[in-house]
Image (cartoon, rainbow, N blue to C red; front, side, top):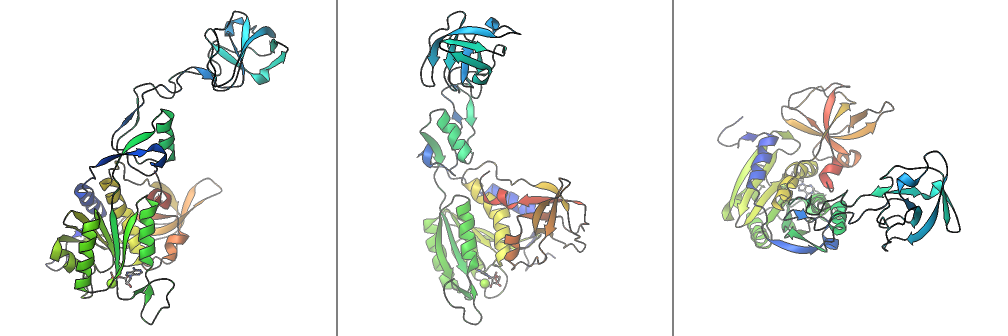
Length: 412
Ligand code: AMP
Ligand code: MG
């Protein structure tokens, strides 16, 4: 298979390895408002300056007591000596009294348990406690979530809503994040027209422009969309020059096959360097990776499903790593095949599949019937990819590896 004209066939893992090693992480760090930091990548680990909770507090609305003063079998009557709503500090609890207390309020000195309201009856300033509790009941201890000085988030974490909330819970109004990656996109092909225009014979809609820019947005990037570019060397060189000025990474679709209407390779070579990879996978064999001045270049194939799949498997981890994210590997799960795949390709295949939980609790994957690399409906019908090893037939009931789209396209 390997001759002078065809570049070497890389395995999926080799190609990914090359990309992740080549990724030059953004270095510049800026302070972002915690409130605006969704999707940003933490540049340093965050250390909590405080304990959370900062003080022992009540987990319930009820009465703070000394547990030893409660009768184990009978009702206990105690005088209610104070009232402690959240946001106020009580005073030390006098012997043989209880403090009316509310969720989140500090436990007064001397008290060691909270009896929940449902197990009490208050008349005037006497509370009757119908059920004894042991010391520690219904008390959230200072520092039980976070100790002062503890690392709460590691550098290289992409901030989701829960990370933002955690940073806020220790009082951080700003967080250090990497500067946002600038990503330029363009789309080659004389046959492409924009949705909203009428199709002339021989034309198709430029769906990749919508898919790719949206894939980038779903990861929190803001693409610089340079639009459709004609199949000519001059036009391709010109847009590449502009992209290299404006972006850290350039991503394109189409024009990386070996036909004479494919100008991307020649254009990148004229002003930078490029490796053409043939990856042992289906869909999406050709992938170009190069460099133009300070910008990395990724040339995705033209076929719409190949764009989607090669983006998810290669561009996504490369971009996230370049942005400083440590964990770029999507999760995958063993599920049961609800199909026969008896004529496997010699390349690894990523089949569009839908996961359905059975009545027996086992998740089974069904295949979209048409797995062609131009059949975009497969990506909508499916909710993930099945990773089919090269040359390995699959029979119904066997285990297959499933990567959910939710892990490829959203926060994790
Ligand atoms: P190419 O790699 O340029 O030869 O393109 C491979 C196939 O993908 C051809 O059928 C193209 O018409 C199609 N294609 C290329 N670019 C796009 C695009 N932006 N949107 C939809 N289809 C495309
Ligand atoms: Mg083309």
